[in-house]
Image (cartoon, rainbow over all chains, first blue to last red; front, side, top):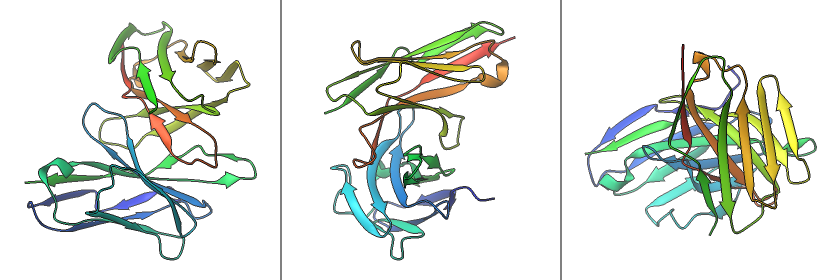
Length: 116
Length: 113
């Protein structure tokens, strides 16, 4: 399978704990995005990388959230001191921009986070 | 800030009919508008992209129109099938240098036999 993969698919944690999610994009894609989606809403942008550079962060991304893409391949999203309001589906997407790419984004299956 | 409205939360139609979904936006004019399909518990799947200088785009039973004057896109599924039942999301793209997509909340389509 050469699509976007995310790990884990589900995470249940207690309030105050730290969690880390991983995303492996499509290998030839140069952009990687993180979105958050709650029930009945569309995905909300969190941050994105072009290669290893983090180019934009949403105001939704508080200082408890940090994302990295150290070698321009996989990415991690860490949430520190989780709160119940962090419960959501965390989606990763990748795209190829430049050349013939028009930024159509390919999404992974998501990581569903439940904070108790 | 950008605001995207999709006409209704739910649309129910009979198999064989044409489903028409609406996406309206305010403020910034997008360079592209994209449509995605999302099934329960899964990530969105890209369907179609239309550029601001295109009026219409087709792919098999799908058709998208883009009216920058009305700030509206229409998404049509012709000869609908129960397998088309899903949530459809529109997303605004302000151009590749800007990166992020602005999503609407989606319209849940149900096609009944």
